[in-house]
Image (cartoon, rainbow over all chains, first blue to last red; front, top):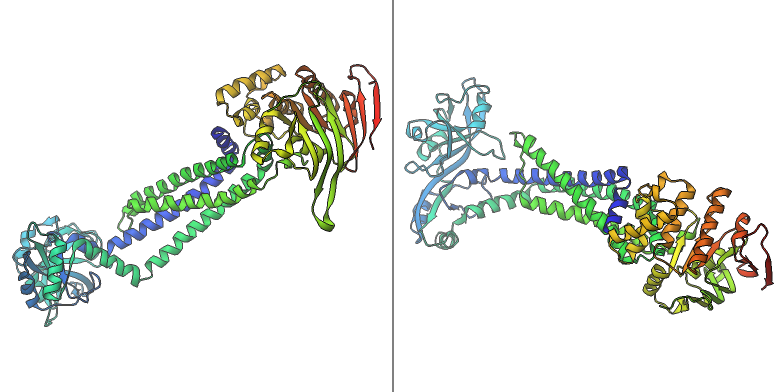
Length: 378
Length: 250
C-alpha cells in the first residue's frame, strides 16, 4: 500500500508542491528565526568566549550577567588567591568608557583591562601589530569591527590614536574578536593602563580570573571560593549560561522571536492542514472505494500518516536547507547574528512533525467516519 | 469461508429492512425484502429513483448493515460477522463496479486493477502481473499504463470491471454501470458482465434504471417503495426478445 499512498500523494503535482511549500515555509521560518535568536543569545556571551585562558570567573555576588559590572575591592583578588585549589588568580577590568576621536566626535568603547604581567584573556588572533606591544605606554589593541567603525575604509595598521579620560591612547594592534551584543568597539589594554583611561573610582576590579590546581575540578574550586570569600565564582560555561538566562528572562527578545516562530508554526499548520484536508476530501470517494474493496481503517490511516510523514520530511529538508543557506550567506555578514545548533534542527523537526500530524488528523477523522456505502452515492 | 455452489443461492435475503434516522425523521428504505440470487446469473435490480435499489445492493455487498432480517452471501450470514470480518469477506468474495468507476486517478489502469490484490496482501509485482492478465483478456492490453483520465468512459468501466474480477470473487455488485456511458458502450459493458456471470458461475447483481439493458438480465427484480414487487425470470437474452416468466411478489 505504500506505493499507492505515494502515487495518490504525488499524482497531482500542483497540490503536492502546495503542501510541501507550506511546510517548507514554516520550517524555514521556524529554523531561521530560532537560529537568529540563538545567534543573538550567543552574542551576549561573546566576551566570555573571547577571554580565554581562565576556567573560572570570580565576581561580586550580585552580578547577573557579563555586562552587569559591580566592582570589587583589590583585596578580593588576594582573598581568591588564598583559597586552596586556586593555582593562580589575576585581575580583569571590564567596562564601558568614552573615547574622544581626533575629529572631536565621541564613541563609547568596551574596555578590557588585562593583568599586566600575564595578559591572561588577551585576544588570540592578531590582524595587525603584536600583543607584546601592549606593554608600551598608552597602548591599546582594538578589535577589527571597532577599527573599521572608527576609521572606515582604512587599512588595519597600528599608529592611530584618540583620547580616553584626557589621555592619549595609541592603537598598537588590531585583533579579531567576536561581535558583541552592544556593537561597541572593544579596546584591550593592561589593567594598570585601564585604570588611567577611566575616571578615578575607588574600586575598579571587575572580575578575577582564576584557574584550579590540576586534579581539582573547576566546579569544586568555585564552591570553595563561594564559601570562603562570599564572592560568586562561576566556570566559563556557567557564566555563559547565567548571562543567556538573564537575557532570556529580563528582555523581550525571546518573546519577540517566539511570536515569529509561533506564527511560522500556525501559518505552516494552516496552509499544509488546509491543503492536506482538501486533498483528502477530493479523494474521499477513492478512499470509500478502497474501504468497500476491503481496506481496513487501520490501513487507510496508515496511508494518510505515511503521506503526512513524506510531505513533512521533504518540507522539513527544504525549509531547514533554505535556512542553512540563508545562514551561510546573509547570516555570515556582520549585520546578522545567525547560529544554527543541532537543537534548532531537532526542534524544527519536532515542530514540523507535530504540524503534519495535526494537519492529517482532520483527514484521518474524515476517512475513519466515512461509510463505505458512499461509493454507491452518485 | 463457504463458497457458492450452483444448487444454492449465492445471495439470500429474508425480511430485510433498513431504516435511516430515528423518531419522526425515520425513513424506511427497505421494507422486508425477500430475495434469492443465483450463481451463474446476471440479476438486475430495477425500479424508480429512491425505491431502495442501491440500499439493497449496499446491504448485499456488506457495506451497509440492515436494520432487521437476514442476509446470507455465499452461505455466510453477514449479520454474524464483525466489522473486521466483514471487511475481509468483502475483500475476498465481492467485486465492485461503480457508476462513476471510482478509479484512483493517480494510478495507471494496471495499477488500479491490482489494488484488490494488494489489499489482500499480494506483492506488487505479482498483483501487477495478474492485473495485466485480466486487462489483456478484456481487450485492454494496449492501455495498461494509461491513467484513468486518458481513457474513455467505456474503457474506464472495463478497467473497473477488471478490478472487480481480478481477485476472482464469486459475487460482483454493480451500481448503474452503464448510466455514464452511451447506449452502444453500455451494451458492450452489459455483455461483458453477462459473460462474467456465466463463465465462472458468479452471481452478478446490477442496479440499473436503464431499460435499454434489461434484456441482458437472467432475472429482474423490480422494486418500489423499498419492496420487491416483481421478479421476472428471463431465459438468457440471446435473441431479440427475451422469453419471460413473471412472478408477482408484493
